[in-house]
Image (cartoon, rainbow, N blue to C red; front, side, top):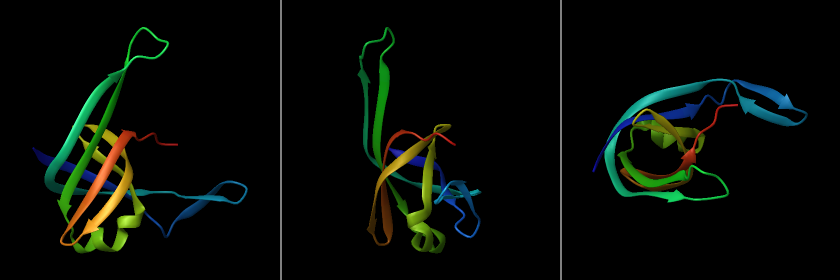
Length: 108
């Protein structure tokens, strides 16, 4: 399956103190990427509620450009099908980068 989406990166040069001794970058830069989805899992998890939660996980492989090679540690989210997904792991396998995503990314 093909991936067409974007990757959001924290801008590291602009940080603000959100709590005492807790710093978080202020701005996110979003860049478009194309690649392959190597693993895609979607399942329903029934908890103590009427509507089950949708649990999504995927491994997305993209060609690493210079920006991704330099800022892979600043990946904030992967935008796929209009939803921002939080990265759970990043594997650098030059010339590709494999990003594992799990739950939704929530902006604070």
